Image (cartoon, rainbow, N blue to C red):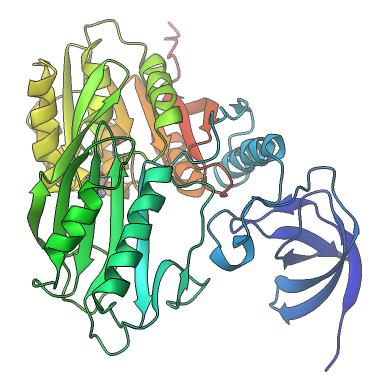
Length: 455
Ligand code: SAH
């Protein structure tokens, strides 16, 4: 077979953390390469416009290259930038946002601010989710090997919080001692599928099981309650997922101890968070992210604001303190229940919440006469539905504040709002919610051009 071996600098970083090399203008993605490295590369797969290469040798290491702190860095695929120093990670993220907004979005005059760092950038996650596999004699709890569903034991993790590790270890011990069968995905047998924990003011533990009945649950409960975690356990829940599916959580659950939710504090607001609801995973930057969204809304107290994809009302309640009225829309019923409860909990009365898809709920709401001065959207990675963008565009809010976890869909959606409805985007603010991974959170402001009437 014809082998191509070449030497190239690494110019940039792809979405999965691979280095980007070039051979006569042809792009080659190289796993393990760091931006600024000079590498010897062998092309292993060729597509028409790009290929994949194996890193044969680092000829000159980049000044940004560091030793990854995690021994399982290569197997896990979670922290794909762990071999790159943190300052460079922040620069890469800023550049990625700029490239997406200029190339996909077509916004030539955009100013992308420096990425707001996470302090600290290790052990920052308030939520950990581990798949369980292997066999009764050899239980494995950790993560899936890249592009597979083989569970690899996790020995440590640089971004989880220390309590999550104690919980994981307790499960290992319990399963081993009492011969509790892990779930076998191929045969659809066994019991324990996932372990999930989330920390706020207290800690929530969720056992995702194929079966409703689990042996020796009381023993597990005792172990968990006596772990000496840094915060009390607020709830232990068994979630039953009896389906052959990649979705982690099932529909039914029951409580083994305490509640199905925890409380979490962001700035001056207390949130009740159901274990099924979305909640930002990095408590150190979330506060800053929401404050930036609020600042960009520049509210005076007279405005009606839509908070679309509102989750448990996190951003809505921030906004409500400075607006006349906030209307939140969210698709998950449990999250909307939490949102309503959260408004009561914080004595915030100028909010209304609607459950349903934003693209279905908003058009009739607008038709019925609701008019937002400012719209905040915070969609999942796939971005906003075009029907929603059209409904917003036609309503003509003065400002749209877009909170995004995927710059490609942010750029796509902003382009639609620009081309069809004249919105301008001048500034974007990346936040490092996910240090050491390539994921980027970003807030961008879209404004209506000021119309000057010519007489
Ligand atoms: N703004 C919230 C949640 C953002 S995550 C926060 O910062 O905490 C995105 C949210 O959008 C999730 O809660 C998800 O359940 C919800 N969602 C997904 N698709 C939706 C849709 N079509 N309409 C409304 N909400 C949706």
